[in-house]
Length: 85
Image (cartoon, rainbow, N blue to C red; front, top):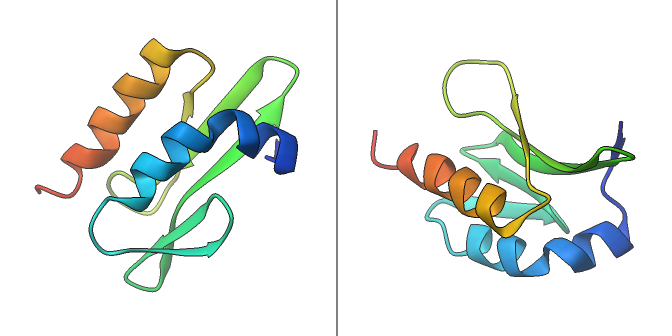
């Protein structure tokens, strides 16, 4: 699964814009976010759809499908919740 390219990120731009608003994130390159100097979130594209990899807890990334608006809302809720812990 490859990292999301410009076309995929264009499709995800409303979600990416909302991620940019989360506190304490630095966007190192378009769609690649760091938190406290550590990779936190990036996007992938695949024939199965668009996905976000995020470190919600611990060391490992968790993968979430973000193809539909419903999936994006659910993902953003989980990612946002990690800031209140």
